[in-house]
Image (cartoon, rainbow, N blue to C red; front, side, top):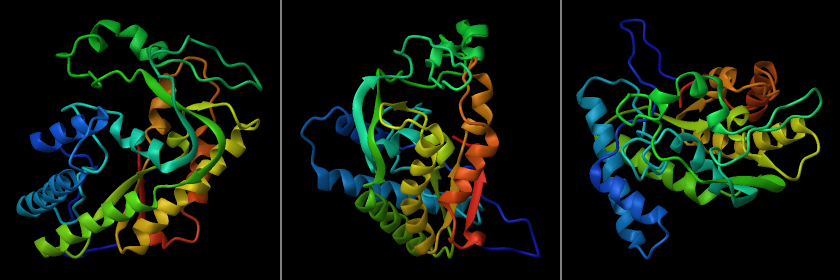
Length: 272
């Protein structure tokens, strides 16, 4: 990881505004219609190259890929940093009730359950603000479905992460930049979906860490800085009576996910 004794190096949290043509291409792809896959990949490649160059032009020392490979079909979508992983984890079944469609539930000691998004403390206290798309706290489209874990979690995103890395490294080389960072969701945040397979919640969490470790390793082995995004560290506070794993357990799982990687090449944050 780059260091400096002469001045403070600049970087940023990760996600940057997508260009309109990429948003439209993502929307068409997400809709499941027939698309020109080669054309889509070219749109994505050009967008990544442009955003890396733009970061260099404004003085960013360690740029990212803008998280452009994490699909956003709308200008605002605060779920893209997490939902990208759904198609990179084996053992998931898509189409379960989404975070807004579940019936509110309460956890009890020894029985951990996931309540719905609207049952969160702040969403109840400030319902009017969250319901107003112009309020500044809108999180974008409300997903109606979510994945549910139906088998042992494994990593199946090898081709996807390889393509992300290739696009980003080509953009860095074209801009003459020596180092950049890529984001990946941390296990303590990634595994917050339905579970119909694991009897033990800690086993669920650590299998998620083991699966995602393959993505983390690919990023670090490519010579890039890895940033783990773990917003659940902060946002879990607002989940009503939900006895999800605590911050210590989630952090330990994150440590497990990056074990044996070059420690200087991994950072963490509550971004999302």
